[in-house]
Length: 280
Length: 181
Ligand code: HEC
Ligand code: HEC
Ligand code: HEC
Ligand code: HEC
Ligand code: HEC
Image (cartoon, rainbow over all chains, first blue to last red; front, side, top):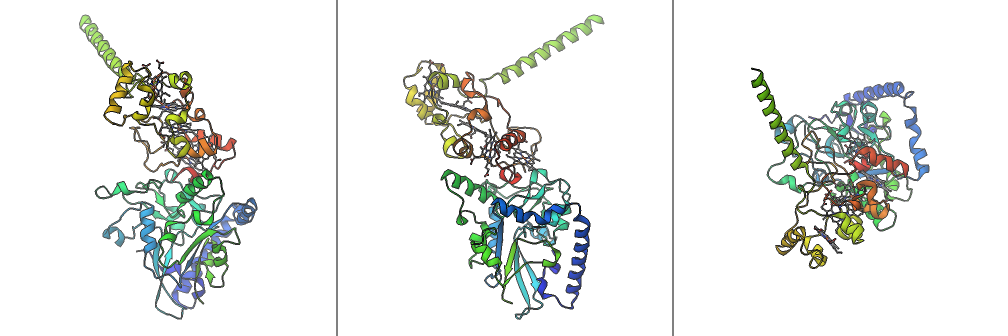
C-alpha cells in the first residue's frame, strides 16, 4: 500500500514519530538539494524569467473545506486519461494507477481530529525531484510549468517513482488491456500507456492543445474557461480551481495567495503549483 | 554431378525470379489503391484546389477525402468512358465508401509490421497548419499535385526531425508535450 505517512501538512508537525519522519526527510532532501544545486543552479530562478516572457504558469488549488472526498475527480481522471482498470489484487499491492488519488492523512493538529482525506494529483513542483533523477529526460518541466512525461522516451527505470515525495508517479506493471469493446470508448487524445513506462497527471494537457487549436481557429487568445482539467469539471462541490498563476487576476492566483493556503511538504523545497486551502 | 549442381542453381534462379516478379507486382503503384486516381489531371489539368477534395485540411484535424458522390458531380460527364471512372461510378451507385488506403499516417501506425511502440501517439491538426499556419501542403506531402499515379507510399516521411526543423525555423513550440501525448 502507498504509505500516507510523509504526506501530512507541514504545519501539523509535533513531537510524534511522523514529525520525526518529516524532519528526517526534510534533512535528507535538504542535503540532496545542496549536492544537486551547483550543477543545476538555473532551476531556482526560472519562474521569474518565464513570467517576463508572458507565458502562463498553470496551477491548481484544492479547497479541503469543500472537498467531501467523494472521488468524482479520481473517476473522471481515470476515464479522461484511459487509465487501466486495475484489479483487487493489484490494488492490494499498491499498483493501482490513479493520477489523482485520495490519501487518508491523520489530522494531527486539526481541531476536527481523526482523519482527513486529501485528493493528491501531481503537484507540478517548480523544483521537481522526479525531473532531476530522470536519466532520459522523459520527464521534464515544460515552458508553462507542467511537469511532462514523454512515454515513448521513458525506459521504466522508476527512479522518478521513488524520487516523488507525493507518490504521484505510477509505473505500468501490466499490459494495457480492457474487457470487451471498452477500449473503443477510449479518449483518442490520450495514449494508453504500455507496460513498463511511468505515467502521471499532466493537468490534462491534451485539453490545452484542443483549447489552443480552437482559440487559434477563432482567431483569439485562449481564455481561462477554455482549459479546465477533467477533475475540476467533475468536482460536485467546486473544490478544485485551476488557472494561470502568472495572471494575478485569475481566480487560482487569488486563492493560492489566500491566508488559508498551504502546500504539501513545503519544507522539502519542491515548491508545488498545487495549493491546498483549509481553515487554520 | 556437375550438371546436377547446374540444374539446381538454374531452378534456384527461376524460383528467385518468380518471387521477384510477385514482389514487384505487389509493389507496383496502383495495386494498393482501389481506383487509379490521378492527381495531376485534377490539380494541374482541371486546376482544382487541394481542399476541394480534402476539405478537412482546412476545417479539422484530418484532411479526409470526399465521398464518391462528390466526385460524380464532375464524373457524370468527365471521362465517363474511362474504366477507372466506371469503378468510381459503381461505388457511387452503391452508396459505398471508396476504401482508399491511408498512406500518410502519424503514429500509432499499425501499417508498420515492425516494432512501433503503442506509446507513441502524435497530436497533429491539419487545420492548425494549413489554415492558421498557412503551411503549404507540399511542405509535408511533396509535389502530390504533379503525381499521375495514385499515392501508394509517402513522398516525404513523417519524422520528428522534420516537424522540429520547421518548428525551430518558424519559432513554433518544440515542447515535447505539444506533439506527444
Ligand atoms: C471538378 C471536377 C472533378 C472532380 C470533382 C473530380 N474529377 Fe476526376 N477528373 C476530372 C477531369 C476533368 C479529369 C480528366 C479527364 C481527362 O483528362 O480525360 C478527371 C479524371 C479522372 C480520372 C482518370 C480518368 C482516366 O482514365 O484518365 C479518375 C480515375 C478520376 N478523375 C477520379 C476522380 C475521383 C475519385 C474523384 C473524387 C475524389 C474525382 N475524380 C473528382 C474532373 C473531376
Ligand atoms: C479531385 C480530388 C482531389 C484533389 C483536387 C486533390 N486530391 Fe489528394 N487525393 C485524392 C484522392 C481520391 C486520394 C486517394 C487516392 C490516392 O492516394 O491517390 C488522394 C490522396 C492524397 C494524399 C495521400 C493521402 C493518404 O492516404 O495518405 C495526399 C497527401 C494528397 N492527396 C494531397 C493532395 C494535395 C496536396 C492536393 C493539392 C495539390 C490534392 N491532394 C488534391 C483526391 C484529390
Ligand atoms: C505540417 C505538415 C502537413 C501539412 C502542411 C499538410 N499535411 Fe497532410 N498530413 C500530415 C501528417 C503528419 C499526416 C498524418 C496524419 C495522421 O496520421 O493523423 C497527414 C495526412 C494527410 C492525409 C491522409 C490522412 C487524413 O488526414 O485524411 C491527407 C489526405 C492529407 N494529409 C492531405 C493534405 C492536404 C490536402 C494538405 C494541404 C491542404 C496537407 N495535407 C497539409 C502533415 C501535413
Ligand atoms: C513546414 C513547417 C511545419 C512542419 C513540417 C510541421 N509544423 Fe507544426 N506548426 C507549424 C506552424 C507554422 C505552426 C503554428 C500554427 C499557428 O500559427 O497556429 C505549427 C503548430 C503546431 C502545433 C501546435 C503548437 C501549439 O503551440 O499549440 C503542433 C502540435 C504541431 N505544429 C505539430 C506538428 C507535428 C507533429 C509535425 C510533424 C508531423 C509538424 N507540426 C510539422 C509548422 C510546421
Ligand atoms: C513538433 C512535434 C514534436 C515535438 C515537439 C517532439 N516530437 Fe517526438 N515525435 C514526433 C513525431 C511526429 C514522432 C513519430 C515519428 C518518428 O518516429 O520520427 C516522434 C517520435 C518520438 C519518439 C519515438 C521514436 C520511435 O521511433 O519510437 C521519441 C522517443 C520522441 N519522439 C521523443 C521526443 C522528446 C523527448 C521530445 C521533447 C524534447 C519530442 N519528442 C518532441 C513529433 C514531435
